[in-house]
Length: 390
Image 1 (spheres, helix red, strand yellow):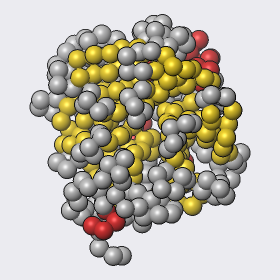
Image 2 (tube, helix red, strand yellow):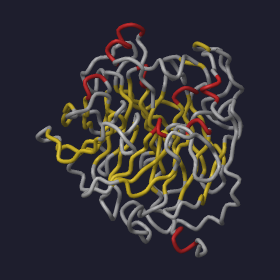
Image 3 (cartoon, one colour):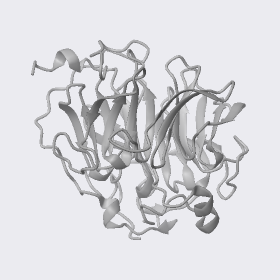
């Protein structure tokens, strides 16, 4: 998720860009892994400068000896046994500036980790989501300008789309892709922010099969034009929830491209990756500002039904990028990016009841994160019974 230093309107008007805080990435990176679809050699696009901030901590690992991976026995519809409060299931975190994915159990043990295999084509992973069968991970990398599929059990990148460190709008080129989901049919969904479009890509052919929005036409008129979309989330029935940054628009669009509704998120200045609530009736969205907030609202009325906000202190959020309602408990999972932590907020008391990462302290040893930016919930594997007692 892009960091903002000025209001969005000023940034867009002045430069046509969404971020000043991460810099504008200039040398092209090496090609991706063998057989990876989109990273094979091309001189097209514009080379972007890779800053030290974008490289983050480099290739790092927690150093933990990882346990054997249990088989997939659950699904989103029928999850594995819950751990209960405070965190019912392990979570996979896109630890952006550590250039790694890391899975943490509710007892804070690290159970799985995927460090960058090569910073040339894998750097700055910022969103991560499981495929519907739990065997693959969809990953986006905004300021590396590419997308990946990672095989969870093999811990390898099996597919790449986009050309690392090159931006553009034609062919396989992207311009700040945010959000990553694998749909039921195996196609890849992403929001290509600075090209003002949402894409569905067939990994088998590395071909764009659906495009909503047009590069250079950054205004709210979904699905024909989109105003800086930074979220595209699939719903259970196949519809897609699209988040537009400008004026905090959230829209529901069918896979065939029919607009069902479009509503401005209440109390939100910079919406980030809207998700449906567990019952599918409401929307939960994070406000990517400081101090940030999380709002749950009813799209039929446009009114909020729940909100988390602290103006200062340990409870205050600093550019939260994702908020999700947790299965089993209904509590709220929040990625608090610039506080270097992922937290769980109790739905009733609004107290922080679980935290991974040390607030405002960067690191990659166990217990630390470095600009976490994405998260998904592992309801697929019964880590609770696979791990030995502590």
